[in-house]
Amino acid sequence: MSRSLEDSSIKPKVPIILASGSASRKQMLEEAGILFDVQVSPTDEDLIKDKISSLPFCEQVIHLAKAKAESVSNQNPESAVIGGDQMCALDDRLLHKPGTKAKAIESLKSLSNKKHFQHSGVCIFKDNECLWQYSETVELKMHNLTEKEIINYVDIENPINAAGSYKFESMGCNLFSYVNGSSHTVRGMPLLPLLNALRELNFIDLE
Image (cartoon, rainbow, N blue to C red; front, side, top):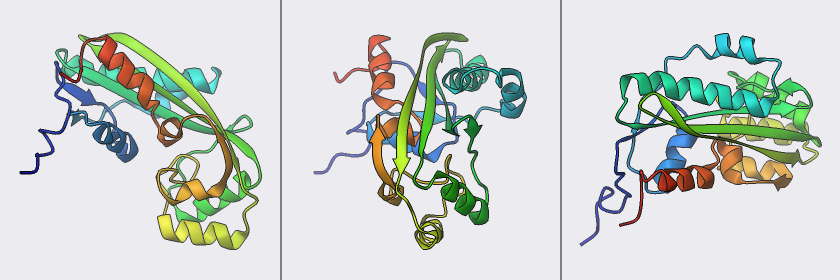
């Protein structure tokens, strides 16, 4: 008899909530076998970004992750709430989610044959308190892509909601000549440090 999804998952010792609508973060936690709920934070990210814009990107992502987790923790104090944020930077310029195919094409043209960075922050809140926070940065270099390659990729994957205009977890990994760091971080969340923290905080184990 096959086991159900719940039977093959890690049952947390406290309820776990992902305070993010990111499909990639949700997928990574599911792949790790964690049982959790999703509750999207109502945080006004643009307002926070204006206040922290002078900080390094690796610190900005922590501030945003904590703001998201705190707002959900206020309503769910007994749960372990995970907040996450990601920024894609080319030199000192942020590359936001493009929103349209045309903007995705322009973004990828600007990244072609260049190094850029993915900054990802994650934290855990419980009882309205931040118990753990962490950020990680990955350096990537994209192939010298032709315009046709870029247009074909955007047509196939439609990465209009992806930071940097690519989906690294699928065909987007073909765009790169090298990646110096964790693929999880490129996808939007340093997964192994997060799992270690959940374990050290006694929120999960394999028993």
